[in-house]
Length: 122
Picture 1 (cartoon, one colour):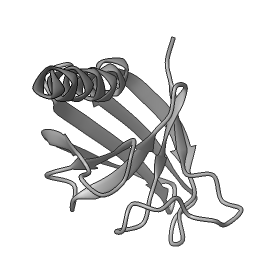
Picture 2 (cartoon, one colour):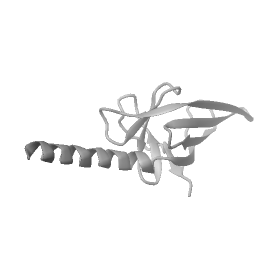
Picture 3 (cartoon, helix red, strand yellow):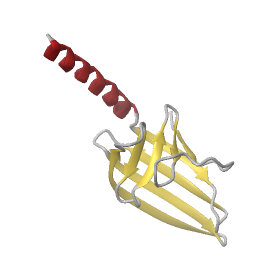
């Protein structure tokens, strides 16, 4: 009986973690601050198969510089609701229902006044 209860609890916990992973898929867009340029327009596409595409356009000196990165994202083992982008310097993002927010290397959301959020497109 104890084994059955343990299996049931493990299954429920696993189902909870899968729920977050199902709802993360989508397209997120926004404008990010930049220390050495006017702004950065960013678009992040997270797919159901854990692949992503991260496109950024840097606006500097009246020119636009496009960068596109593709790879796999994984869930952070240490931080809840944080994913990491494999080919983007292991960039960490906290996932919320309506947006993703850039994190520091430890997976913590920056506590400053700049807006580092990309909002989910409907």
